[in-house]
Amino acid sequence: MPIWNPEIECASRETIEAIQLRRLKGQVAHAYENSAYYRDRWREIGIEPGDITELSDIRKLPFTDKGALRDTFPFGMFAVPMDEVARIHASSGTTGRPIVAGYTAQDLDVWSECIARVASAPGVVKQDRALMAFPYSMFTGGWGLHYGMERIGAMMIPAGAAGTDRHLQIIEDYGATVLISTPSYAMHLAEAGLRAGYDWEHSTLRIGLFGGEPCTLALKHEIERIMHITCTDNYGLTEIMGPGVSGECLGSRDMSHIAEDHILWEVVDPQTGEPVPNGQEGELVLTTLTKRAMPVFRYRTHDLTYVITDPCECGRTSARMKKVRKRTDDMLIIRGVNVFPSQFEDVLADIDGASVHYRLIVTTENDMDALELVLELDPSAFSDSMADMERFHTTVVETIKSIIGIRVKVTLVEPGHIERAIAKTHHVIDKRSSL
Figure 1: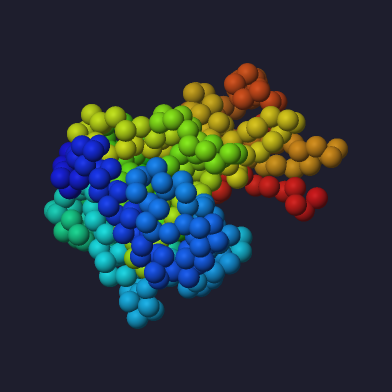
Figure 2: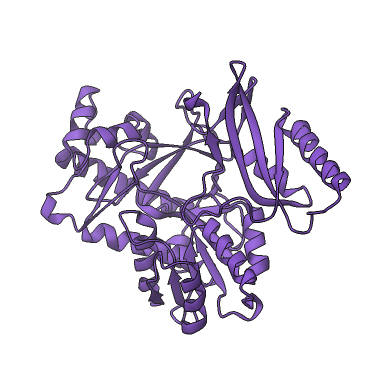
């Protein structure tokens, strides 16, 4: 597969770290001079730009969290005059004030460069035609992928939230070769095509570029099986850039390469904030090295992962992060056991007849948290035999108990029962607050 920018994507560790240090020094100076927020915080603890002389000195700076971005809403984190801000994006703000991100023209150029790397990894080239199924809104997903694809030279089909039938027709009419969407929507589109008699095996579509939510290996493989395409996903967040912070190659399908020349990463113990060794799981902390409009230092993502710096079989030498499956703030504690939704995905992936569609419903019973798994059967496992269904139900219950360590209520539902998400899928439904 092509490598978009081999000079940096295949650079030595020494070269990468030299670039990072030079840019970190410049970014700290820029923020100290132009960001009242960071200048005031650093002065309070006696930090000046000259105190940053090596990469490890990043730990002299305090962490930044989501609360800071909300407290400074809308433009308090910006470090350039407003007439230099070429665009703003924002999170949905469903749990409070939205997170606002600003970009200069230079920032947008860097963003499209990072996306070009992500898209090139599975083989996107100038001759491709990309169907954009993300909505064009304040959300970063659609716009980031759009301009990155155009940087490669690919044709963009900006369908946005046009609807499933329309998207299927666009693939047929215009010969779309790349689908850009959430993995949940790609699965929805795949199943809708099957119901409509669409011939995925002979479709022009060949690549899926996913984002907006985690994509399990099981879901990815199922989409690839139905659509006969190659799927990759990328990691990003509004606070740092949007999509493109890291992207999957075809060498190691459960890892993604970090854009290290633009992002400085740390992995820390979520309790102490202290660094953990490479390869050990911890909380991902990110610092922007080149973003001028809104530099962010040591941002606590709450995402749990680990990072390795060994060269990849794809030829890239940039550090790779394990795909994010867990967060420090989505952990459930059920009868004293720490539980993450990703654990259920891993268990279900190994049970024949379990589909990738499920919901976890949390309630309170007798002053204790209770958990129910609503699991959609794969069509191959559905049976009119009550005995068969009871055996399958017992298998799911006992497998979960043996691996995760708790017994949960399991409710089996027919294929197609669980509503498909067009945007981000929320696997956990927490009903405790209403009880």
